[in-house]
Image (cartoon, rainbow, N blue to C red; front, side, top):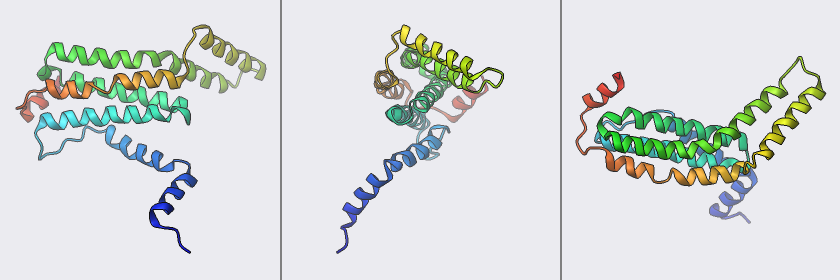
Amino acid sequence: MSTPPEQATTEQTKQRGGKSVERELKSSAADAKKLLLDPNAPLAEGLARALERILGYAVASARRVEVEPKKAVHEFRKSIRRARALVKLSGSFVGKRARKELDAVLKRAVTPTSLLRDIDVLLGHVAQLKSASPEMRDGLGAKLCAEREARNLPPAGVVLGTSSAAVASPGERFAAALPEELANKTLNKALRR
């Protein structure tokens, strides 16, 4: 007796252990890395969609924290940097106040992840030290972990959960701050700054 297609799909997803989520992240990552603008849509709408895609990828990356915490933190931080760059690019036609507010929200979201990322990077470098003895590498690694604990850093999942929640609304604010009529030459001018 054969399995109904919808049940087979669910079973296959369970067997793959969430690989469909990973594929989804990879395809959205490709889009989030590019400033994709629909030539048939108004420029303001394209910019708003681009920021929405970037922030959407940041949130999706944060959800992967239980599976790959270091990668989740890294991808989240990269996405927020891209979002901040887009806000900065749009600054001349969004307005100084709106740009500063949006940038501040994005900066507040990424700041708590900085120390987590720094310690992860240092731990990676310590593990690759060839001139150090295994005891020295273990000792340095233990010191870094102790530093993380001494600073009472919450787990990466808690930090990313809070930070990703903070970036839910900037896309709407950005779209609202964009002028309805935005000429391509305005974007070209901003790109040349």
